[in-house]
Amino acid sequence: MIDTLNFEFGEIRVFENFVLVVMKEGITVKPEYNDDLENIAKKYYKGKKFGYITYRKNSYAVNPMVYIKTSEIENLVAFAVVSANGLKASNLEVERRFLKKPLKHFTNLDEAKNWVKEMIENLPR
Image (cartoon, rainbow, N blue to C red; front, side, top):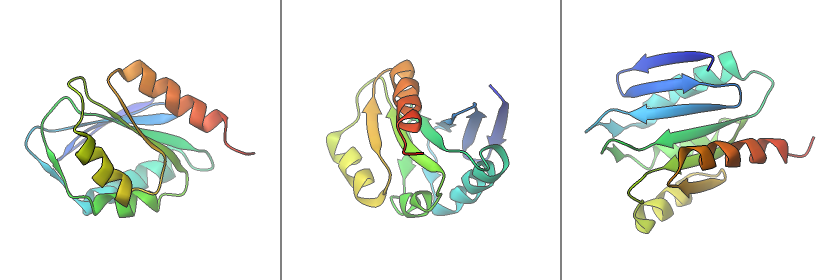
């Protein structure tokens, strides 16, 4: 792990090839939170690709408009959702409509990390 960053919405752990995000219980993820993600992308991943893993161990809401801004982060190449209790298929479909990046659901954090790593390694050079 490179760094741990705390925000009003939750915690972001920065790793070599991905960020691991844990949102706080009961919040609503808003599009303006993307400003922090954009700053992280510029600071820690300048000139390289990275993935985003959201570890949904808390209950919270997401304004789907957030994904429009997330999609604009050029060096973000994969978006993984990890939830142990399973995610409603309808929620994931809504997220897919707004996010223009590869998106996959996992019930295991290690599987999500491996998928993100594969996505980065398999990018055209």
